[in-house]
Image (tube, rainbow, N blue to C red; front, side, top):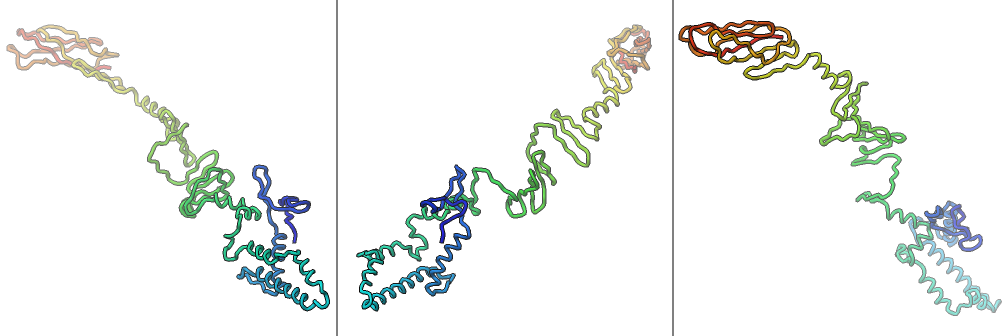
Length: 360
C-alpha cells in the first residue's frame, strides 16, 4: 500500500512524507488531485488480497465479500486464540494476560467492538448513511466534478449559458443534418438537410442558395451584386451602376435623352404655339380682333419666329353670309411677320379672323 504520489497530490498533508488529496483552487491555478493506476491497483490488491486470503473466490456481482472475508478471518483468528488459550493453558499460564494485552487491556472490549461495528456503513443503504457526504466527495476529489454536473445543461429541457461556449465541430439545430459547422479557420458554414447553404468569416457572408426577404434591407454602404464576373452597385442616392449601362444608369438615361433632342414644348391658349424638340418646327395659332372691311392687321405672334415662316392661312370667324356677299380675307407673309387684310365690301359687318402659321 502507499499514499497518493501523483504530481497533483498535496505534499505532506498529514505530516512529513504523508501526502494527501486536494480539491484545487481555480483562483490560484492549483489543480485538484488526480488519481493514477498505481493507487487504484494498490487499493484493488489490498482489498482483493484480504478476500482471497480468506478463501473466498472473487465474485463481480457480490458486494459484501470484503465484509465476509474480514468476518471469516476474524473468526479464524479468534478460534486460534481460543484454542491457544484453552489448549495451551498447561504450558503457558500467561495466555490470558497476553490476550488482555493484545486487546489493549480494554475492560469493555465487547462494547468497544459493538460501537465500532455501529460506525460501519450498511450495505443496503447504498451510501445513504454516509455522515458527511460533502466531505466524502472532497476526499475522493470529486467536488469539482459534482459542481460541473449541477451546472450542466439538461439536454431534455435546455437552459442558458452565461459565459463563453466553445464548440470545435458543429451545432445541430432540429436534427443532426442541419445547423452550424466549423468550415476551416475563422469560417462557419450553415447546413440544411446536410447541404451547405451559406458560410461566413470576418470579411463577408457568402450565401449559396435563394434568399427571401419580407422586410427592409438596411445597409450602411453601397449594395454590390456580383455574378458571372459582372457587378452591379446600388448607390445610396438611388443610382445604379453596372456593365449593361456602361457606368451609372443616370448617365445612360441622360445620354439617351440628349441623343433624342430636347423635349417638345407648347403654350396652350387661344393665341398659342407648339414647338418640336427634335426639329425646332413651330406651329402657332390665334384669333384677331373684329376687323372692318378693308382693314389691314399685323398679327402679334404669341411666339417670335426664330428664322422664317413656312406657311400661313386665315379664315373669317362669322356665321352666315353677309348681306352683300361673303367677307373676304387675305394673308401676307412679310419677313417674320404675318399680315391679315379684310376684303373691301360694301357691308359694314366687322368680324374676327382665325389664323395659323408654320415656322422654324
